[in-house]
Length: 275
Image (cartoon, rainbow, N blue to C red; front, side):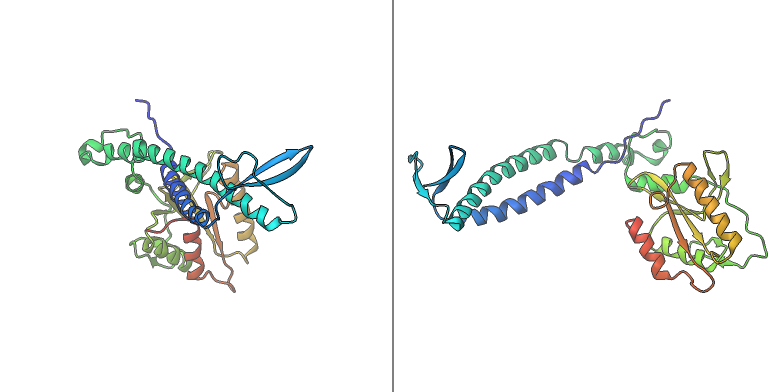
């Protein structure tokens, strides 16, 4: 069976955000318009020169001429006209967004809930087109993997999640991820486009964007050979379309400049929305 998958969308959230923004601005501009004095400005172009006329009565087709020396008055009435024109367009867009959201504003959620509301036994047999972030997260976590073996002579560090890691900094990263509710797998194998299998320190899952991310902690950057290997590994990632700042995260330290727990948390909060 061919599988289809809807890409995550922020369309409905953006529509709601836009509608709220428009409504706030509409309210503020309308209040400003209510304080303007009566009358409307009429702008006429006579022999290439703009002239301004104030019309206090809709039936007045000419209006009273305003000298350009009265710049503040002209500016005042021009702003009034501008605000009134903008209010009409704001109102139109608010109405359109309201109709759109009323018809389809939770379309993505309704599609996701077909899968979510099914019994677990049935969900295991389905190929869902879309599912909630939490369902994607749980499905990713449940996928088994075989990590890289840690030799017995490596110092023992056990995380709050109950797994073993290789260093104190990796322990701190693991515990911060676990505490902030970011799903991760330690040293999960990754097949690169070259056919090479590597083991990123941490494979993380961004459920909202439906993609894996990789965190490499480079803990011995004052070691020349280690630093050279780290650069080579970065190049291997990039050849597979995985770039720093996008799906690849780096933290670094030397013997004299260790990685701080505050740095770890700031990195996590930059890339993810903690639970």
